[in-house]
Amino acid sequence: MTTFLKTSLIPLVAALVLAGCASEPFTPAAAPAAPVAFKEDGAARFVNVGPAEAQPRGAWWTVFADPVLDDLILRATANNTDVQQAAARVQAARALLRDAKADLLPQVGASLGASRATIQPGFGAAPGQAANLGTAGFAASWEPDFFGKLTKTKNAAALDAKSREAALQSARLVVQSDVAQAYFELRALDAERDITRQTVAAYADTLRLTERRYQAGDVAELDLARVQAEVAATNSQALALDRERALREHALAVLLGELPTAFALKEGDWAGALPGIPAGVPGTVLARRPDVASAQLAMQAAEARAGVARLAWFPDVSLTANGGYASTDLGDLFKWSARAWGVGALLSLPVFDGGRRDAGIQTANAQWDIAAASYREQVLVAFRDVEDQLASLRLLADQAGAQKVAVDAATRATRLSDARYRNGLVSQLELLDARRSELANRRAAVQVRAAQYQATVGLIRALGGGWGEGAPAATAAVASPAKPA
Image 1: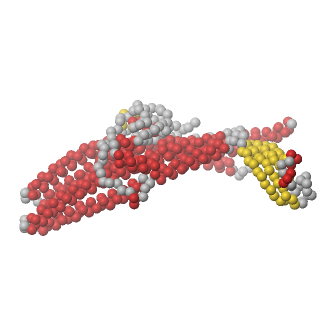
Image 2 (image 1 turned 90 degrees about the vertical axis):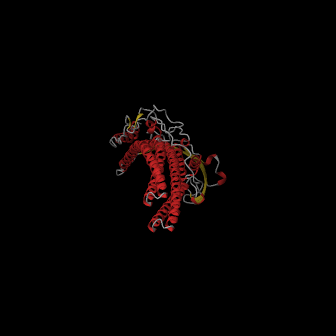
C-alpha cells in the first residue's frame, strides 16, 4: 500500500514543483493615474469612486431640444448595423460563458446501437465468429477542478461577456453621437445654403440694376461682366453646397441603418439653443466611459487566461463511469445477465512536450500585456478627448463672439455700399467686395456655430453619455485606474 501511494503521488509532487518554477512572475504596464484636475477646467476635481459604466445615461440628446434629432437617434439605436453587430457579439460571449460553466458539471450521455462484428468469447458465439451485437447504456464523466483551471476559464469567459456588454454600450454611444454630429452638419449646410441663396438673390438684383445702367450708357461693359461673374461664382458655391448636403444626407441614412434612396431630411433650422455645461462634471469621465470599462474587463480576462496557461503544468484528473447492456440477441438485450458497467479515474501529466506549455504561458502573458497596453491607451484617449472638447468649446465661444462682430460690421458695410452705389457715389467694385466679405463672414459664423455643436456632442461622448440623467454629482470624480488583483 505504501509503495502504491508513493508511486501515485510522485507525478503530482513533480507537477507542483514544476508549476512553481514554470515561469517568472509577470506584471503588465500600469495604467496612468488620474491627474488632480483637467487642464481645461480646473473646477473638475478627481476623487476615487467605483466604476460607473453601468449607470443609466438617459436620453442625453434631449438637451438640444430638437424633436427631429430625437427621432433620428432613436431610429439609429434600433437599426444601426454596428450596434446590431455589437449586440450579436454579446450573445456569442454569453454562449461561451455558458459553455465554460458546463465544463464544471458532470457530463452524462446515453447510447443505443446495433452492429455486426466478430464476437469475443463470453457472448454466446465461437471466437472470431461474426454475429449481431446490440448495446444500450449510459456514460458519465466529471473533471474535478482541483487546481482551479476550469474556474479561471469560466471567470475569463464572464469577464469577456461583461467586456462585450460594455462594448455594446460604447457602440450605442458612438452611433448616437455620430448621428447628432451628422445632423448638425446637415443643419449647418442648410444655413450656409440659405445664406448663399440670399447672396445670389442680392447679386441678381444688382445685375438687373447694372444691366439697366449699361443700356443707358451709365456704366461700362466691364462693370456688367464683373457682376455676371459674381452671380455665376456664387451660383457655383450654392451647387457645391447642394452636392455636399446630398452626400452628408446619404451618410446619415447609413448611420440610421436605412437606404439612402428612401431617406430624406427636410431643410430646417436648429430648433434649440446650445446647451450649457455644468462645472465640474468632466471629472467623472473614466467612471462613465463604456469603452474604458470594456478595455479594463478585457485586460482582466487576459489576466485570468494567463493563470489558466500556468496551470497547464498541473495534472488533469477525470472520473468516468459507464453502465448498460450488451447482447448478441436483441431479445435478451435488457436482461439482467446482459448488464455491463465500469468506473475509472485518470490522472494525466505530460512529461515532455518540447516546450509547448512554456510557449503557451508566454503567449498568454503577451496577450495580457497587449490588453494592458490597450487599456492604458484607452485611458489616455479618454483624458485627451475631454481636454480636446473643453479646449474647443472655450476657444469657439471666443471665436463666435469675434465672428458676430465681423458679421455685423460686414452686413452694415454692404448696406452702406449698396446705397452709395445706387446713388452713384462708389464704384461697383466696392459693392462687390462688401458683398463678398459679408457672405464669407456669415458662412464663417455658421461654421463656428456648427463647430460648437460638434464639440458639445464630442464632450458628451467623451464623458461617457452626458451630464443629464444618471450623471454623478459635480463633486464626484473618477477612480484612478489600477492593475486588477
